[in-house]
Each structure stands twice: as structure tokens, then as C-alpha cells.
Image (cartoon, rainbow, N blue to C red):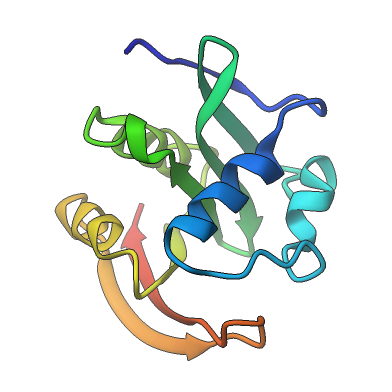
Length: 147
């Protein structure tokens, strides 16, 4: 598998890609709660959003947006059949290097244990948890890294 990583385009099937991963984890996908995905161009203004594709199918996504003095990394999702090939690590590094910010921050659902191992291996420090008002009442952990 040799994915092509490129900037997001408005016709990309990002919603479908992420909804598939939510379903894998038994999560409800509520497009209303996921408003940033309905307006990727606006939600990630001043930042960037990338997709990785293989044979025209999106297999991974990642975004970064300004968050005051920090960059906020969001939406790193890799399809099950594309995991363990370094895509998430590569996208995380790309997002973490975007722009000139004091630190990198992200929130991640506590169910995504593999992602948390990745963040820790990349030097992120875990922080508090929060409970979202989404249909699943998801619990997310905060991670941050200086630089």
C-alpha cells in the first residue's frame, strides 16, 4: 500500500471515511455535532486538512487549526485496513510541524488506546479528561507537546 497524502478538496468523502471508523468503535456519527466536518474549509481556516488516499479511496485524514498560541490537531482517523503502516504517525508529525506555535494540543476519545500510545511515543503529555455532549457522552483525554 502506497498512499498519496494531499490537501483536502471539497469533493473528498471525509464524512463517509470518519463515519466508518466511528461505526467500528460503536460510536454514533452525528453530523450536527461534528460541525467542523460540514465546513472543513472554514473550520480549518488558518490551518490545514489532509487526506491520504489509495486507489481513489480515502484511508486517512488529519487536520490542524490555530488555537491561540497552540496548534490544535484534529481528525486523525485511519481506516482499519490502512493501519500499522505509519500513516497516523506521519500525519501527526505533519500537523505538529504546521505553522509557528508554542505547542501542539489534541483531544482523543479514551477508546482510541492505540492512538494514545502513538501520542505518548511522539512526546505528548497526557492531561485532563472531559465528557462531551455528543450522543455517546464520549470521554476524551487531552494531550499536549511543547513546540
